[in-house]
Image (tube, rainbow, N blue to C red; front, side):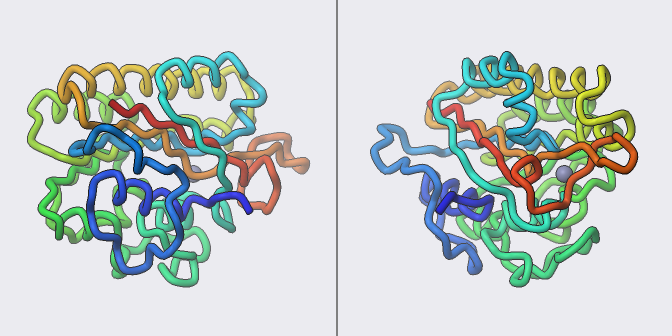
Length: 256
Ligand SMILES: [Zn+2]
């Protein structure tokens, strides 16, 4: 059986030596037990809807991500592959039934999350996200630093500022341009492809700047939530179905 998004939280907790949040019961999807480093810092980059469908269509982008990675993991999203359902599972290890988000809604999660586990372990956490996105809202009301920005480039600016200040142990960085444009202009419209290119460029920039700030004993993850397919009714992009296009993902890690 393939791994799912639920394995991300156990993987990160194991890598950082942090006890798991309560609903994270699945195994890690990446065995980091033979790492020579003890990971103390992490930057988690979440480019929305950047699924394996895009890597298959644009192999040059896949290659470019791999050039700035040390590990690649094949996995499946969680059903239904819709942003808040997926990020809730990614950052809790829980099923949708357990975390309670079963369709498109953005409540503040009351269950135990990765961020609660990190805070209990004494880690300083920052979430930098586009204002009113799922990641901006779902994990509120915790003792961590929230930064709500107008759009992806300003999210990146804030993330770089936080890296240079080096006050946080875990920084979440959320971008949404591709998910926006696949719905509004088509799965691989010229603008949607540009958005994918922007996400890859951001990944490379974040890896480079995290390396400068943290030097070693850190990881950077490329952790999208779901893919997408062409809606036969209108020809635009969509997601939310139990299909390979929507469900198949690759996660990447740069670990040093
Ligand atoms: Zn999404």
